[in-house]
Length: 498
Image (cartoon, rainbow, N blue to C red):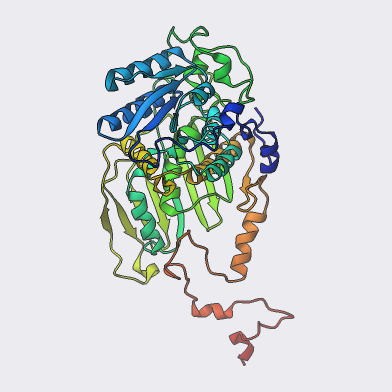
């Protein structure tokens, strides 16, 4: 599958996601949402592709929210697999008492059902199309991470989101933790001084190989699964291949449908770090790694690292193995005056501030401290609740993981994935959003700033002036400078010597 970068304008001309699949859906684009924004009417929610995460999180958490009193109705399901359709409909009927309309093709559901919102839990290669179709049909969207499979698709989702004004939440549940807002405020106030780097991780291990724990079942067969629709061959989303239970159930192992740890796991931690720092699109990304142990027919690597450099003068590192998890690296944000050190996972009740030496900071008042934050026991529940509340208020700003944040995370992990696969460095243009192959311009930009003695750049929202970002000039530096024709620089102390 070709992973070479393409210009965004060319992508928009050729992508099948730019047009809504059915004219009937396009006709709904201007229709107002039925329940959202009106607290007296229940928000009517449907599910697209409630398989593993889609059922265990999307369906079950929204059922729980309904039972807890939120004004929502769960009314329809679309899935290519009959077992998933029946399971979802039966579960909602058992738990809430209402019948659920069932469809094979989500587009039929969008056309025939009176909906306000959809939850998308399909494989990655369908996310962009289903999200765009749904928003163009006048519906709010919850899309499981990753928001899209490709950067170009993510940019188009953002455009559609802005055009339609719909409420969208991307399913990285850790963004609903209050810790990241607390961290961002402290960073902007200069507690760490100039922010230089973040590092994060997602280590795992398994005796059978990652994602092979999704069991293969006899019921998974072409009689129960619309295989061509799952592939998306007609829509241009994937090339045809014969039905295979392993590909269907464990699709994250194969490039046409997912990107392994890059989009299943790295996107979790990357999104959280972008939220914490306020950073968005990277300027330069490189990926490394390899498939070193899990030789089970998979495509994706089991060891990988992504290094993303940002135009604000910050580097992000994402590192993991899928074959070792007992010696994980720490999650850290580093600044000139100190660092914030976090635990692994999402169960934060606080984090540590580790100051640099006073000989560097010139501030002996900086002491190591524990910063307490409110923990959240069930981040998935909190994340869905946040989405429902944003729909009720008809206010996208209330969503904890909006599409612009989702797209920035996709840019980091997808460019890293493509760099690993293609052996190339990629640049992202902040203005045109074009992706190009790397050259020497990135290093030259920073060298030019040093040559001109410029001040460092800062994270968005920085309001601490020069705090922690101004170097002292040793007195002996007055001796620096090129000698011309054997003579010392003008105003150099040597000029007046003897």
